[in-house]
Image 1 (cartoon, rainbow, N blue to C red):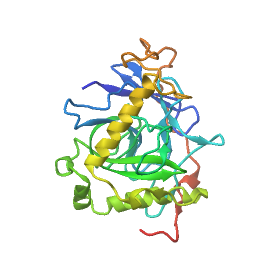
Image 2 (image 1 turned 30 degrees about the vertical axis):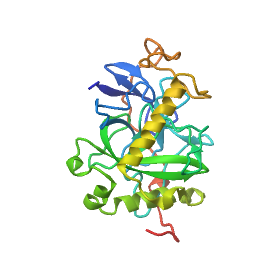
Image 3 (image 1 turned 180 degrees about the vertical axis):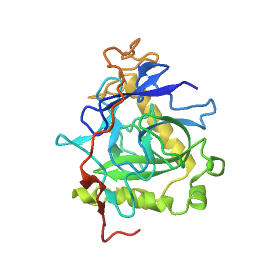
Length: 287
């Protein structure tokens, strides 16, 4: 197993913050260079943690910057934080993405009737350990939900760290309800209401909010891996997406090493506005 680490530049909770992925001390792209599959049987997948459980900063892999560092999303020049919607606190799972996947905005999914959201596939990792930004976890897929976000398909894969104490008992979506009762329902609720405090309407789901099983999830992940292959090979236009990588054979954007990236800094997180800790009570929704 390759050794991955995180090179942080700038302080968390600032516009300058960047978390680069390193493999054996060399910067690589978490979007393009980390393999999707972590074993030959393709039953274990690599996941990049963007947002640790219980935290609020909306961190994500940058698509347009070379080597795709993780940074904090902004809106109108201000850092974005997810609000606390009672009874939830921040993100209720380790939230991240699968490398070497892409939800193609040029393709309409036949069942959701919506195009892809132009991002790697999102992952909600439900194990007990709190991850850290930039961590590469090995996970097993359990199921998937299809959020319809402003007219786009935004897949949310439910997965568990293979090293979690419950991992051997969690093999498909029905096992999640058996061993972690209420979590699927809470995930549905969280996804539906998290934008309401910012003045947006409740999100909608395909499949009436149902979480589909492991088999269906695996098919979607493979489809998005094939879409990424078309992207990285130049078959699909990249637009603003940076394809710079160090590992993908045949890619015209492959380089020998990452140049010009500063050394890491271990800075304490910047203070956040106390209002981020406020809890919002959302009326008119079903728990």
